[in-house]
Image (cartoon, rainbow, N blue to C red):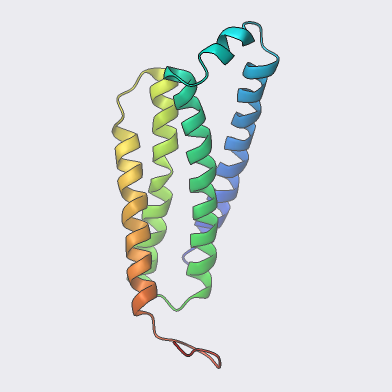
Length: 140
């Protein structure tokens, strides 16, 4: 049943980064010092905060799609397992961006997550290209 954990984790991650988006809206529109936040919006921590929000939502959605497709397509167990885990590991990228902004950590998680997601997508693409059609309308 590879894919179920990607769907569940993807939706939970999506919800978390949506809440984070509301925090960013609060900081931009309602928080004390909002004028300074707006002035610094495209640089430094503010820019990285937006990158984390966008990539968090994107990678969450990718995991939902990957999970659904892993459940539906005839993919071998070995590939399905690794694609699933690599896609999940990809979510380290936005967490790494947040860790940089909030904790001042080095970008190790960003690199690990980004590489994991790229490898997952390449692997899934190769599997999809080499997949044999199944079912009635399965002409290629």
